[in-house]
Amino acid sequence: MLDIQNVTKTYGSFTALRDLSLSAQGGEVFGLLGPNGAGKTTLLRVLATLLSPTSGHVQVAGHDALRDPEAVRRSVGVVNGGMGLPARLTGREVLRSFAGLYGMGRRETEARIAQLDETLKLGRTLDTRAGEYSTGMKQKVVIARAVVHDPAVLILDEAASGLDIFARRSLLDFVAASRAPGRLTLYSTHVMSEAEEVCDRVAILHRGELVALDTVPAVLARTGERNLERAFFSLVRDREEGVDHAV
Image 1 (cartoon, one colour):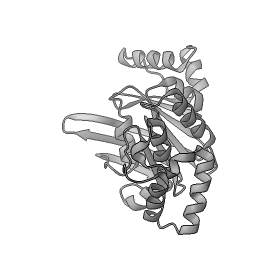
Image 2 (spheres, helix red, strand yellow; image 1 turned 135 degrees about the horizontal axis):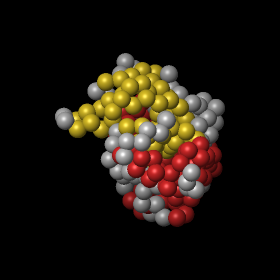
Image 3 (cartoon, rainbow, N blue to C red; image 1 turned 45 degrees about the horizontal axis):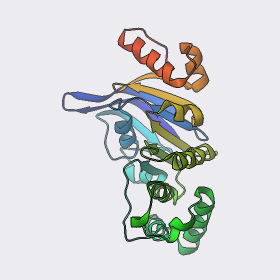
Image 4 (tube, rainbow, N blue to C red; image 1 turned 90 degrees about the vertical axis):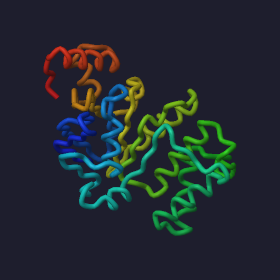
């Protein structure tokens, strides 16, 4: 579902990603972890074809991101913490509009909206104008909009940012329930407890480089720490001190 080989991304003299290689399979919730500036968002923008790598190769859902970006875009859904909605439209109108962009027919669209209503508990958000939404209501519709076309790869970039405890819980439950054959969820966050709860494997990035790639229990065992946040600090500290952990 995802194959990244020797990807580097530079902005002038600044290197955001350095010779990064990793892969992820269908059925996984795959975590991209690191502090602000680690390169997570740059990588996700490359995967969504919003940026081109300076060098290296990327395949998403079997499609080459440079040679066939349109196929990649049809295969992904993207959610980040800062996405907005047209204030005058209801949730249902937003979903119908995006379904139309993906060439979905009316019957297919209405069936998909009903399915998303059940999964995400959209309720009254469907027939309420977005300008009246709380942050949690807005994020539910943003997620529904991202997956209305049933993408093979769902990219969540700091999607829990700014959510209250109830909306955050709904998001994490949705991510946990998203595992399915032929589906990949990429969950990018700097909140390690979220990743520890929902991710099958995690890639830890620091200054654009891959520090670790493994299951959460394996990362904890390697570092001897009791939680992922402590393990992260241990791995980053050792990297800065020149201690090489096998990825």
